[in-house]
Image (cartoon, rainbow, N blue to C red; front, side):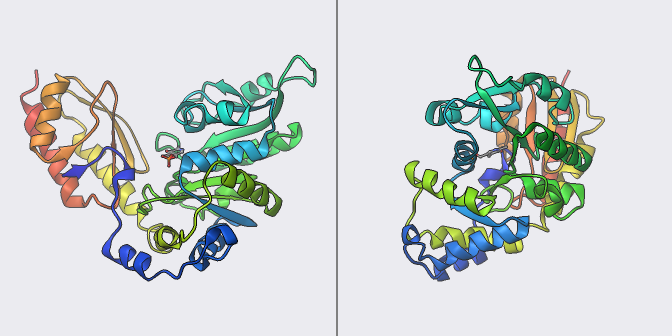
Length: 335
Ligand SMILES: *Cc1c(COP(=O)(O)O)cnc(C)c1O
């Protein structure tokens, strides 16, 4: 099956599995796992930050970041549709006693700094203490403009807020913006990165930040049940991903572009957006018929009112051609 539901569906390659099997390991709770230590060093270095901590998931990376930046009764400002706010079970509020202040994002994925400013609470016992601004990059595949990141940095300095990046796909953002990832990460106090999406590792994220920040983050990780033992087995996959699968993200971006171009002009298919490895579509047809047609053609997609198709390292150019042809066949006869 050609699986376009998400870039989380990637499977570890034979070389990645070999790296996992061969990884030297130790008890990471004692700080003894050389592969975990190496992954953390490499991740921190790639992002130009002091330190990093390896965690099981992006959700835990973001939760730990929020809990490290904010204390009980503090507030963070975040996009209404941001993953940290909308798709992480309300963890910051439930487990961190942190109040979210969600705001609508602009069409380009940025949060208007004017709007953010209007939501910062005065220093008064009536209000939660506004401590943090959280951004997401990429967001719906879109790369946040680099000059906006610089403005956001100046803004948080002026207002004494911390700045966190949910960088689940920050390497897609770097490749999509044509810059080294440090040109993005340098504006932030902390960055979470998923190793298990387009980078192709089976498990894991890293949270990067300053030394004191990561030291505190390790305490929260332990408390949240994220302390792992011979985690080098999975860290090896993340390390392999960082060392081998970053540059090739441009293939995924080119495939998404190729897909969007191939679907343009088809009757009943509106290509709404295409950025980095994501194509957004509106179909004007009977969804149930369409979904079963796709499945018969060997294609998995989550079809809905707005459909997102995601390219990744297990989808080739030939696969994309097959997907375009499946659309042509079906939509040729769509009313
Ligand atoms: C996937 C993702 C996460 C983390 O999700 P996990 O499933 O916990 O790894 C966080 N933010 C964004 C934007 C994501 O896409």
